[in-house]
Image (tube, rainbow, N blue to C red):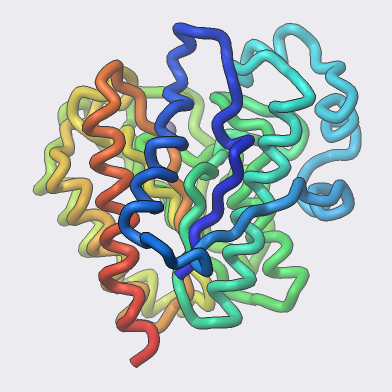
Length: 303
Ligand SMILES: [Zn+2]
């Protein structure tokens, strides 16, 4: 098990921004507590090299991000003001996901990125707090390294629109997104498989859908690698999520994913995804549960 983190993940942003950046430090502290002196658990990613980012994003877009020449409208769609620090942060996040993929695959293990899940970034534009798409870059680099069956399991409340768009014609990657019907992005892309839920959907329906699909995906795709986006914005009380999944339901979601992955021996890399509530406590609890469930199920990989 490895966890990716770098201090730049906690990028200083203007106050009152609705993106809960402080959760990353708190999650790092939580991991320090549960892993105690095990320094081996950490991956500290450098910024990803530009040539690797080019596996997925257009040269023109990368140049804008490098030079800080995004149009005002482009910047507004991303939701973060551009800065050199932000550009560094993004490159370290995508590198973190990629290093975890390599580690998980080589060691038949699990990896968790404390940030990431930037699934709204398209090849040539960013949206919804996402500049570079770590899931798509990781999948593309994985395919370049020889993987032929990668499952992107996107259980953030928002559709993985950028990932679906980038990987649409990639025969080696299968995108599955379970998301809320009536929230951003209102114009959905087409994943290989989409399941959209009505506002107010509760645990039973949500978990039953997941429980039905996971064994089918394991059987039909036979993934060599799973990239799991574990957004906490499916929780009831989320400002934008519209679903009513309890904390326990969210934990069961993670359990279902890791149980299916581990019992089939599939290396799995998790990204934290979204979570938007004024009260940070439920978001943190959901993310902490994700890490705990990953720790609980990962030993099954070795058997
Ligand atoms: Zn989200």
